[in-house]
Image 1 (cartoon, rainbow, N blue to C red):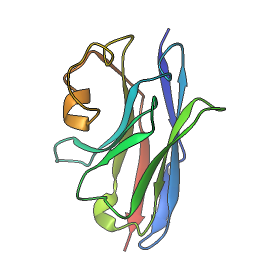
Image 2: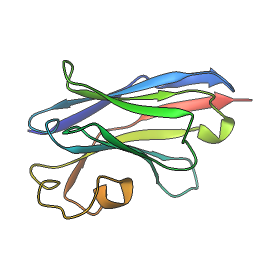
Image 3: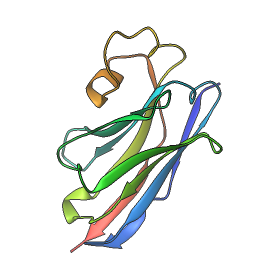
Length: 133
């Protein structure tokens, strides 16, 4: 059974840092497209970063480029999101998502948030990040 569990959220002041972790189980981790999304109250869900665990290729949304780093930990079978220089606008519920089963291997496009939501996918329960001014 594929499962995603997020951890590492919390409250921090502007300019601070947090690291989120998405721990996978089942067959979710290997050679897969895994990403982080966020949704603030009253706003649309935003895909912010993805990684293809087969070769470590990454994608970042402009809103987080240069501040956030997505990485994979093969030993822990997790995908982490290092968030630096946090701003109040980064306040949101953060979700991890992954292509389910062999969905990404059959997908003709690159590993991006836009493509990940078009595939059959799995989601975690979310972790809250709050950044105060």
